[in-house]
Amino acid sequence: MKIKSKLFFTLFNILFISSVLFAQVHFDADFESGNINKVKQVDSTHYEVTTRKDIGGRWFYFRMIGVKNKKIGVTVTTSDVDRPMYSYDNKNFVRFTKEEAPYVDYFEKKYECDTVYIAYYTPYTFSYLQSRILQWRQSPYVTSVDTIGYGKKGLPLQDIVITDPFVPSSQKLQVWIHARTHPGETPGSFHFDGIVQTLLSDDPVIEYYRQKVVFHLIPFVNPEGVYYGFSRTNTDYVDLERQWAKDDSTVAPEVLALRNHLKEVNSQKLISVFQNIHSQASSQCTFWIHTASSTSEKYYRLEHQFANLATSDIPYFVQDDYSYSNLKSYFPEGFIWNHYGDKIVALTYETPYDYYSDGEEVTNENLYKIGRRDVYAIGEFLKLSHPHRIVLDNEDATVTGNWQRDSSGIEFFGNYFLASAPGSGENKITYSSGNIEKGEYDVYAWYPTNPNFAYDAKFKVEGGGETKLIEKTERTAGAQWNFLTEVNLQNGGEIKITLTNDAGDTVAADAFRIIYRGEPSEVKEHLVVKNFKLWQNYPNPFNPSTRISFDLNKAGNVKLTVYNSLGEQVTVLLDSSYGKGHYEVVFDARKKGTLASGVYYYRLTFNGRSVTKPMVLLK
Image (cartoon, rainbow, N blue to C red; front, side, top):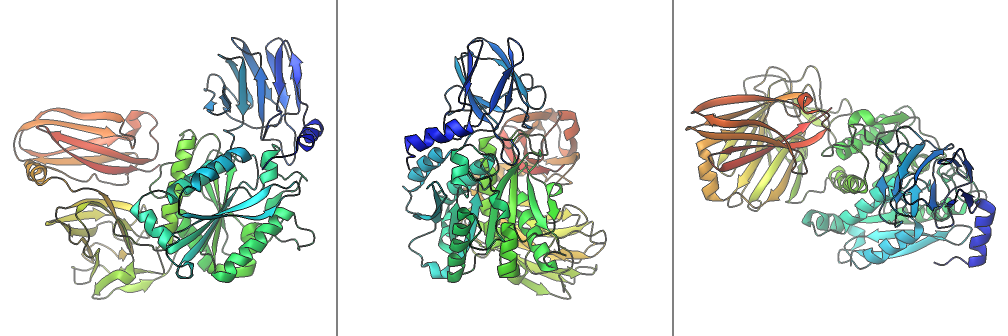
């Protein structure tokens, strides 16, 4: 959509100081999403910049011209940025280094080009969104891009609908995700973009999700705020996030359009998950979980279940990052609760601008990964089970003996978990994948934690002609997917997981996940591996150290290496000759500097043959 030139430049003349020239360094923000107010020269190389404020003045996005080979220092007096972004082409943005941005709201650098663009975080503009929508519409799974309303200046609110058009919608669940209520929160758009990328991927699991769910994706709640470079409001200086309790005659047009569309979608079938994507200045992701006193005990638990699923499998977000508040009617989640109660789980998901709680820098790439995990969390929350990503809950189990249903606490998966008093194994529960294709699979367990639960719960995993016994404590690391082991199905078949009450305390049985990882190992390799055995590390997850054990059936050269999730080497623990026997080595994460939480891999290479296993560091 084009904006009339006269209107465009009139607004910029009113809202911006278009340019300030000092010592032949020119500042301006005369472009889409730009935000600068005043520039003051402090000395020959230093400047103070203020932003145009609405509710706060966090967002800035401006251009400096005439800076080649000049070291320029800038203080942004109205913001709170830690290491903003810069670009020479206004497309590829790079974060200032710690040396270039030594403290909040200040950066200095000698630039390589005459023109440089500076932004709080990488911009995600209205025009860029339209280019992405053109790309996404090439997919047959984008079944529509509906305009559901307009802002006062005529920019559209768009609903991107993603689903499998060949499966009747009447048979599907519905999910709603919207973003950019506050226009300066651009990391939220990259999170959202990652969701769309994932939903349009060729992954057979995602294909299955599209067959089961209609996804309503609203990329910009506040398109005009984005276009004109506002920080938290629309162009009438209204915070749309706090408009949801107003009546139709006084509410902002953007919120009125969203509410009406939401009601229309829910008149067909109630959405199951409502997600409100934001970004925050705090150096962490968060979910805003609403207290039980302002909602209900059931709703409080369901909020935690979704949040816990979303934090599993990614290193950037842990359960300690959650935020809590009483639910307010003027927020979108308040509107959902007041109209639909606990039938719809509604949460605000926030990502940071600078760092995650583990110290990792925020990038577009890891925001895409958060979006990808978000999609799988939705699928797992809805119990969508595909042969490549199987979710087994207690309804899927075969129960023998005395197991009691329990729905106490907020950490269990689904509707309840099963518990058995300690004994000698007379109480047994078995979960089965059914017959699945050949391949390598990872097996995970989910259980609630309790100081009175077993420290030695024994998980027996059978598949591919092998039986593995994995011992876990159920006193820690609950409410997340805990890796148990891998299974190699050479010819397809069944994976079975069995728990008994052969333990020192109460055993909790809750849920399991089985994920396809690729083609099975070659038979020849599998036989050679019998010359040595690499055990799963213990404890796992771990913090800060864990033990890695292996057995050698003959003498040979051993190399034990740890890698991160990108395949980069972290450390070599062993590299020497060893005789036949059992060996154990400790991996202490503290000795390797600041390692982020997440999945790591340890590889044992013995006489030219290797086996790799994952392990999880949780901080």
